[in-house]
Image (tube, rainbow, N blue to C red; front, side, top):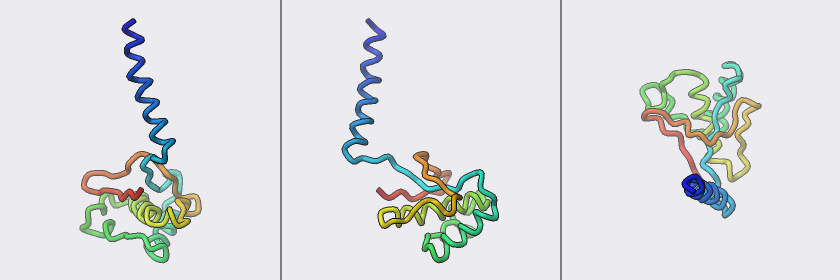
Length: 118
């Protein structure tokens, strides 16, 4: 009997998650750099995102809250996400020539908060 009582809360929780998503509540998502992509490809995509793409790259500049870790991959993730959050509802994608993907794991760290727009 006790094991049945333990299953009821778990089943209720799972049902809640399913219903929440089925009524239009999508999970929070971010666009980040693919770890398997070379720095050269990431740098090219980062340059585009911060230039013609219109991403807000001010927070990955020296002395700003998302400058560290100072890697191409971390900076690209921030820029890709900035671009995608602003344009995902207008046809913008999280592709960047295969250098990025969508995740439901918040990539924010320390004082660097990655933007999320529903």
